[in-house]
Amino acid sequence: MAYKALQIAQLLLSKAAERNQELMSNLKLQKMLYYEQGFHLAAFDTPLFDENIEAWMFGPVVPEVYEKYAKYDAKGIEPPTQIDIKLNEEETTLFNNVFDVYNQYSAVKLVEMTHSEPPWNSVSPGKGNIISQESMKKFFLTRLA
Image 1: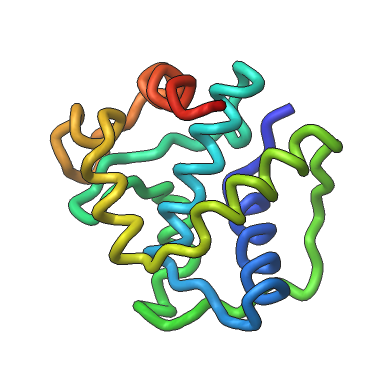
Image 2: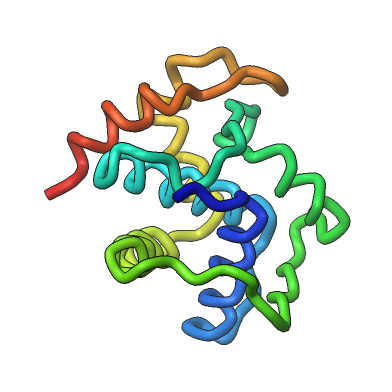
């Protein structure tokens, strides 16, 4: 079952505040959404969320989520007080594993990482330029171990 990207963003923001006692920036949030989506596509052959990911100058972006949190600029985003979704057990395990691996990196490092990966660097950067789910799935299948 695919969720809304904003729901997954809320989970990420909440988990970052809970685990790190720090707030996640919009830039980092966008990269975390990309990694969560990529590994979900590879592991389950279905998207975690329906919205497209675009190849913007600073890496992958979900425009709807970016716009929602744009007012925060580079500052940390306050986590939601309530989250309205619950992932199933398999999804939760994968979500937490991906979070634990990629959340340790700074937003700048995540930008560098995404720029070196085929799903982003095979698309011309710019608003409206979609990173295909197929290219993400193909790449992240090579990262599942």
